[in-house]
Image (tube, rainbow, N blue to C red; front, side, top):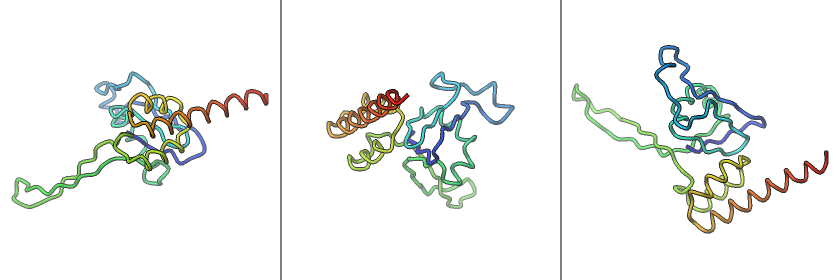
Length: 149
């Protein structure tokens, strides 16, 4: 699940249910205790996102977090015979964005772990080139800030 953290600070989100009665039942999928969102775009394990998103409801409502997903609305008949709309939200990976959209997400990403993951998963040459370029920018920034100390 690609999410964009729009604040200028880190956000640490526990990968546990906020509901006390579910805490023992919920198992995080990636083995991580927390999701760490850096400013910009981040790729979060889908299973972890499903568990942790309840902690982020206010941030999503206030647009501090943008969630990139495909939304599908389907009309179905209920048991009572009335028609209702079911909305299904599915996670959107980088490979499901066109190259121009992917380029914007990559340029907004400050998370080296996310960039490495995208480099491994996305097979499009132009997108991989953008990822490698962004990784080099981050490495240069880190290297230069170390020199200043």
